[in-house]
Length: 143
Length: 147
View 1 (cartoon, each protein chain N blue to C red):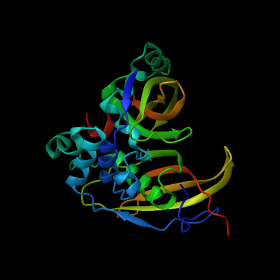
View 2 (cartoon, chains in turn purple, cyan; view 1 turned 60 degrees about the horizontal axis):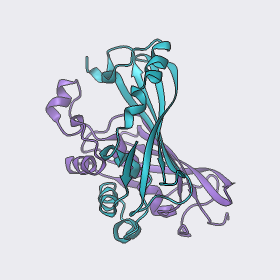
View 3 (tube, rainbow over the protein chains, first blue to last red; view 1 turned 90 degrees about the vertical axis):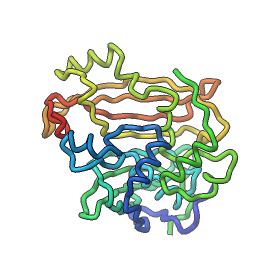
């Protein structure tokens, strides 16, 4: 399935910004139910406080899932070849995740053109809470 | 090892939960999986099996860190796809793999970085996808203020 022609395809190109959130308890429990990660630290405020956190906090993989969505909306659902995510900081309810991405490499592999994308999700204060690196097949011609 | 059926409804549920609105996920009876969908393998198999092997525990002790699951932090996950993406209607077969350990001196003490993986194969053994995990055992009992 081809990527839409609006998807960035050149080295150095920036992906259009996108925001996810503000993250609610509903977003968190919906992701926990969908993913099967029922760790109560993500929905039990009392438990989280007893462990020294100000409140229950979001699931790292929810933010990673948003970054994956950010990419598939641009490059198509069949194009993903690799998706790596690193958890840098916890995210609390009420925060918005600001997704950014940039193409760092364009290369050929297995007979197709691919882009390597560096992605970040930042919180409202500008701190990177999740970063990710992804490879997508991309047949958009370089300008 | 476990069998993991890739289910259309689960893909739709996962897509909605991650704000993915593409009709291929929501309406296609043979929907492809979203990039991080294989995290739902926990409904079918235990992800951390590879850490329970004597090999992994010994590698950790050799690195000078006691493997205590209460001090296990999830740091990184990577999904690698080989060939066409798994899609609704497919069944994949999982197997766990311990890769290696390396030691890092972090702010909160010595960490044993555990690298392990789940492989997803077709019935005929063809590798379709891998989840590569990096988690750390932290030596000091100061993880996230849980002490």
